[in-house]
Length: 452
Ligand SMILES: [Zn+2]
Image 1 (cartoon, rainbow, N blue to C red):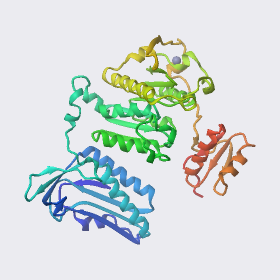
Image 2 (cartoon, rainbow, N blue to C red; image 1 turned 180 degrees about the horizontal axis):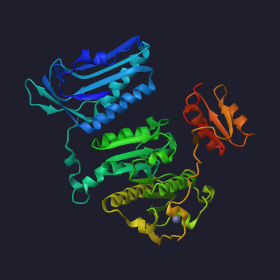
Image 3 (cartoon, helix red, strand yellow; image 1 turned 90 degrees about the horizontal axis):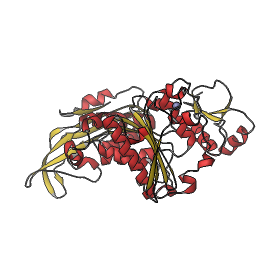
Image 4 (spheres, rainbow, N blue to C red; image 1 turned 180 degrees about the vertical axis):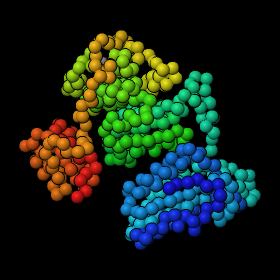
């Protein structure tokens, strides 16, 4: 449990909260107000906390620690208000069977709190004027007010509407980077990022959220942390996975910045089924296409019922593009999203926009609508072409716990539909992704694994 307290922290009480007879180790960290900082004598400290977000983020950090480490309980408290010297500003405690887990979890929690919580610190000095301070391990120490943040757009955008919006952004590539940055900075209240992919070197020239040191790391995780830093007044969440219809829960609309037709159709169909608007963009070299689908008002299936083969189109991974083109198309995507939030419609909900980014020529095509389209009517069943299955209803189960990746590859080739399973469903999903990447579309992963 995480909490924000305006009263002095009682270590004894908190210690009791996390006690457990199974625990052989208790690790407690206390961050204390000290009497000096950067050569100045400090007499007291003042913390200002952005409550709503700090609470959510704090809860999330403790939850993450529980998943990552083998601990029994974790508890953390951050102070707000005016603190005297020697008072605890932050308290973190974790219990576990073994000390290593308790140490690691406590360390993780305090580091993430320092990094992610929207907390500002004002130092009061003995001989100098008090000031809001910046410290290198705490990005949020630069103090500013939410209304100042949006000062230069206040005559253009309705900030209250933006704050209420809940947007799902699928794909954090060339289109997703500029789109998510622009939406986060504009103040979209909740942005949820979906991407299974990890950063690679050939992403860096156009996907400007990522740096060389991020190569190999999860795109959504890096993006979420940077976007939180850019705008501490909004909520950012993410799913490090392929798009799933479950991701649509609690969402107002979806932005699709993915790069293949199969995924685009999956998102498209799910949005029609759950009656959510979809803004979709595609980029092929210097040609961008943008369309907003409002359920019931025409869809891709009106024109072409079968999913087009990617080989007929190609995508930027295969044919290349430039950062300037991708970022322009992604920014237009964000602009269309802001317009949709503000007015309920936008230019690309009426017409499909085709834009050549090299010649700067564009044309709009009136979208078609087939009268008896089942998809437009929402009158169809979603076909589960996704990689994870919840139970092994049909198909061969392959326990991969004692098999190498190559052995799995060998074993799946003679089977029709095969469901990989491991202890917790993590490795089986990874191997499924790898196999699907090689065209083995008949392979699935058993979600959650089979612990026994
Ligand atoms: Zn349709």
